[in-house]
View 1: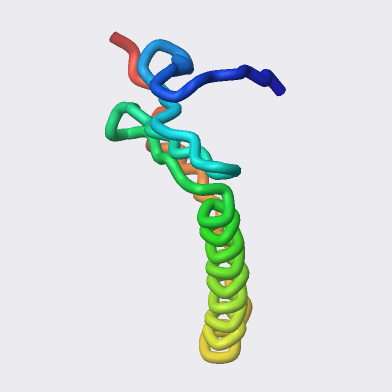
View 2: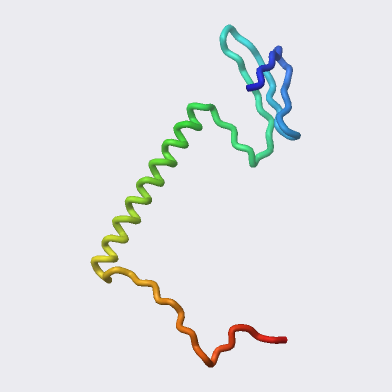
Length: 97
């Protein structure tokens, strides 16, 4: 981890297009401003962690839903089989130019 000391109104540049600026220091709180392209997402750590937990739960529920659906379809249609294409003598594998 890179550790820098900055005073109020001083900045740090990340890459070529992200600026992090110390706006104010009040006691043990620091106000920070970010300038970044619109396609760069910026979150507080606790918000980011909550989003990740929710995404993980959504994937688990989706997998459970797919398993449920697969079981229901198997009960209705039976176990699915994959048919391999049949080789036909009248179809040439490649076309010569």
